[in-house]
Length: 452
Ligand SMILES: *[C@@H]1O[C@H](CO)[C@@H](O)[C@H](O)[C@H]1NC(C)=O
Ligand SMILES: [Fe+2]
Image 1 (cartoon, rainbow, N blue to C red):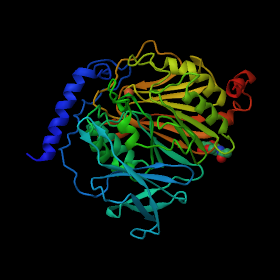
Image 2: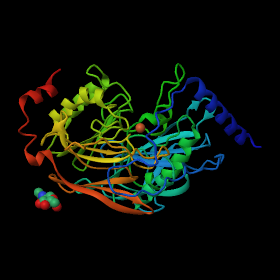
Image 3: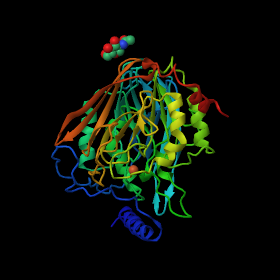
């Protein structure tokens, strides 16, 4: 037995002990077998969790490479090495093998019980041209990677998927996403389902690298990122270390909420698992961020978060109520077009809603927590279906949001039917800018935004 195999044994043993002593497991979703989804689709059987052989990663080559947007015309490159002397540097250029620029980054590592992470490197590159392929390598070694920067103008396409995990269904979801032409990947929480077993963050990093090293992945946190241990670990340690998002670039003091702009779209990533009440830092930041939005520059305004505010599935009923009570008036006053959530392991698309009723100037709500995690699907929907819920189905899949111009966007949901991606729901969405809601917003709502 090698030292590394022993290391794994310790990790597992400690995991079991701590599980019993300290941890409340995230609540399981409703049973995966036999429930009626309310729709007439016959679902393929669940797929197994992918098994990743424990491979000691002692080589210095860059691993788990992923990229994310980091302020106007910049990209953050993140990778892991197991050689402390490997430099935290990215070299890049617009032709393969010809690196005309380089950028110095920084590296850190963390410990979690008996687990020690590799060196996690972050380097920001840019300014980069838009809609352009760049070739890069990390730490002056290993393979060359290729990325494409997003366009600076419409149209732009987002791939959207939540609650991804690492099962056979995750693999098929990722394969379908890779067949779509998209610019930026959006993930509203629940990434690896590592759930305290830190090496599963590493296997997740490897699983997503083929996609996440080529297009920016913009994520926000879910409950499975928390991994807190009472009086011992405050939470989000692995997530914050590995999935650093542009929060400093957007004036936030926490990696758990931030915003970014790309090609005429302002996107706000909120945190369902950090304070959101009217006295919280997140609330103050959100208000300031909304005040910075210029609808001439970014006609589309989107919000992503983990726990849905509107949800007609029995799973996680009412969990988003408190956050909605605090923040829905702000988002409505600012004229947010679409809110995308995860958490519930099913797909649901709703009409424009505000204050629990249909409202033509409200937000389109979409739940897309059906990436393929190991907990299975949330199959039981409430009946009767409220009028504002348009389409709901418990199947794994992903979404695509193509913003065509300042007035029109096309949303589609693609179900993983066996090994093919089947478009199962789609709709044209008109921006609030185009329907007059922004200019006609009632003064009492404006006041919500302007209040100190
Ligand atoms: C925006 O795109 C839609 C859908 O393709 C089209 O019908 C509309 O004319 C476009 N609007 C503008 C201002 O180009
Ligand atoms: Fe969740």
